Image 1 (cartoon, rainbow, N blue to C red):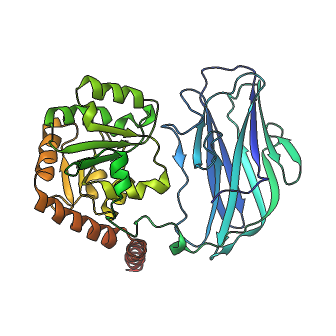
Image 2: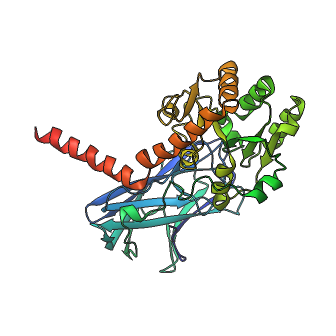
Image 3: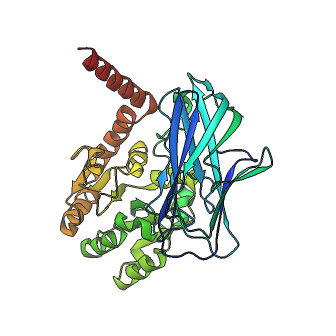
Amino acid sequence: MLPKAPYPVVFLRSAGAKDTKLSVALKLQAQDLNTTSYLSFGDPAALGIDYWDAFRLEPMSETWLELFSLSPENPKIPLVINNLPLPSGEQGMNISLFVDGQLRGQGLSGSYILSWEIPAAWPPDWELSLHDHSRQLAVSMHEQSSYSFEHRSSVTRALKDSRPLIYKAPRPIDPALRARYKLGPRDRVVLFVGGLDRAHAFKGVGFLLETWAAAKPGNARLLVVERGDLRNRYVQAAADLGIAPDVIFDDGVGEDGLPAVYNLADLFVLPSLDRSEAIGIVQIEALSSGVPLLASALPGVRTVVENGRTGFTFEVGNRAGLAARLKAVLEDEPLRRRMSAAAREAALAKYEQGAVWAAVERTFKRAAEGRSS
């Protein structure tokens, strides 16, 4: 959910300060609720999403207050830590803010107070101002440290009404999609979904390509879905490794097209190389389409895989281990079918929203019982 214009923005103008990394804490208060968001400026940073950004999470109760900013380049991505490059010259930068809240399931209305802390080392030639477009008002954030405003939230959102993570119709394979990728009738598809930019280099695409070249799985194609500034490097790497005919790069699949791509796959692989990969939501999306998993045994990632039932894990960065698992699953049709059925069952049992909320309720109940005992 994103704000409707007009909405408040922070405007930053710089006269050329360089090599500085400073953060501004934005604090929002309404009734007895508080929340904080951060704007960080300096290098390295990107107008889009980078390694230092933190996404806004879906509220997990019926009472909440939230404040997040919108990336100038990706205005549909809400961030609670927005890491941005330094603006150049007099052009400046607009950073959209979104505030809202809910009290016992109803939209929160009344007085809001936004306050901020600007670091003492803030360069004097950086001008920071807050613009309230609804009141046609701009205030200097250097001369004031807070701003009060009235807001009536239009949000009334039940927890169980949010977008489901589990796809509803597993395994319908689109013949047109197979034709688009020029797949033969016996070709099996190993799928990777993940960013191909420098911020997501930990996803291990280069490692995956090298493993594929060593394993040489027969009658199989590797489908790499996503985009990023390293895409051309990976395409060249596939050519250099002699596996270009086996690898399909598709950077034109949007969110709406992902279910069809998952349903096309026979196996999903997540070869991440370090703990920058927390859990891999793509694994759950694959499970929901009945696609077995091959994943590196990182602490969070491995919790999604039921070894030997919904897929296999392999030692992080171990090419021989991944190659062996690839061959084992691709060459054993009965095993792959059993894992496919188990994958869908696991997705519904563990990650369907009703199951998730039941688990949350059990957790809170245990916590409450432990506190009272």
